[in-house]
Length: 314
Ligand SMILES: NC(=O)c1ccc[n+]([C@@H]2O[C@H](COP(=O)([O-])OP(=O)(O)OC[C@H]3O[C@@H](n4cnc5c(N)ncnc54)[C@H](O)[C@@H]3O)[C@@H](O)[C@H]2O)c1
Image 1 (cartoon, rainbow, N blue to C red):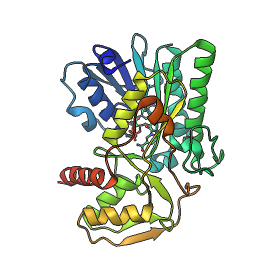
Image 2 (cartoon, rainbow, N blue to C red):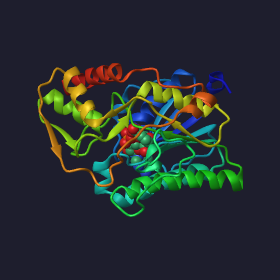
Image 3 (cartoon, rainbow, N blue to C red):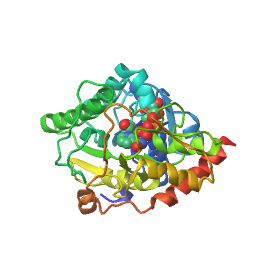
Image 4 (cartoon, rainbow, N blue to C red):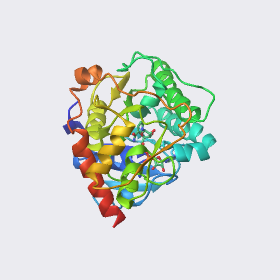
């Protein structure tokens, strides 16, 4: 299918008032789709979609993804979950269930589903760059497990509904993505928004552990492009979407401090439990089946994100 297929299609996005959901909604509207964004606003914000309200083809529904009526759509995109450590440490039960129950509701409708899975299905990988064929190294009983195992169970649900009921599923193993509208609140907010806000406020930049752990960050516009391509592809198995540009968290903190023109000190705090040492996807499959790879270099994406946060801080 090419992007013209999306014109006039009805698409529901759960987690639609979140960071990725709101950016994807915007892109799909731009491609002519009608978008219903469903969100219970547990971590998302109505401000993320305010600019879309009143735009033809867009509707926001405040509801739980597990309870919304998902019948009659051409595509269901499941992004609802509790992905930020601050939230999932506080609400592990909701974290363990929110991802799976909303996904179950969508899969039961029998319509096409795109599932926003995560690089966290790999846990602390022993194979890096990590291909889709790697099964993961995940602690099933610990502070990260409600999120990590929840994401893994989601993939198993996709497999089950596709194998037994022929439901058409697409699975994006999303790696760390950043950009405007990310939630920066909380002690353990995701690294990029946290570092940016700390740098802009002149507060200490808090690094958990010694900062030698690595991540590969993708700018949100690139990620949305990958998600749309995956929606339109006929590839039913999991696909890594992420950047191959691997940086240590300490390098990231220094780069953000420099780009923000900040003189914040870098403060080291005890490591987060079960924090993966390295994170870098093998994206050969995405290149082959989607013709996709990230285009926006880290420094460029960081500059745009810092500018957005500067405006948001006022
Ligand atoms: N951003 C990343 O780096 C990243 C990486 C890997 C995977 N993901 C996945 O992508 C998806 C979107 O993540 P994000 O970064 O935009 O996070 P986000 O927190 O901004 O978005 C998640 C949204 O889901 C909503 N939500 C939670 N429980 C819900 C429920 N029961 N019913 C309806 N809405 C509910 C939240 O209010 C929020 O708006 C998530 O599933 C996440 O696990 C994100």
